[in-house]
Image (tube, rainbow, N blue to C red; front, side, top):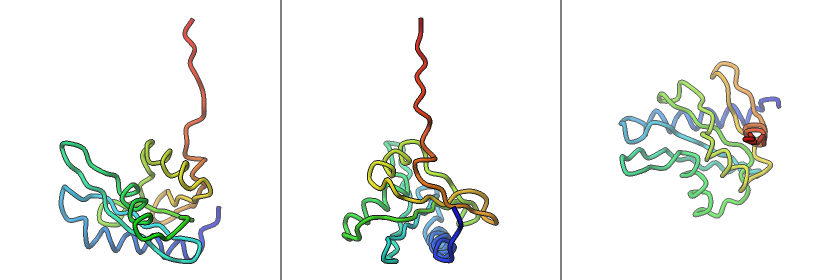
Length: 130
């Protein structure tokens, strides 16, 4: 999928959150998501020995809290905004279940691409033991 100007702005928004809020081992990734009407919701991950929350999960919760509706595009950045990070497997499933039409921005920061969240899910293959 082609990157839009609004996609580039979303990467910048997530990077800005990462630069401001990801300054400790407790917060290392920032996500930003955009709705169809242009609203942006952001969040950071929470790292904790007893379990934490990925930045994408925090964004989904914030979106629900703010009643923003359907998320259209999401991006996650790390290293204080210097790298794009693909969602982990559980987050991919969560995002696909809640927002099946969601676009996810991934790839190198200097050449990102937007892909449908469904393309990030593993193929359904089953290993059958004899």
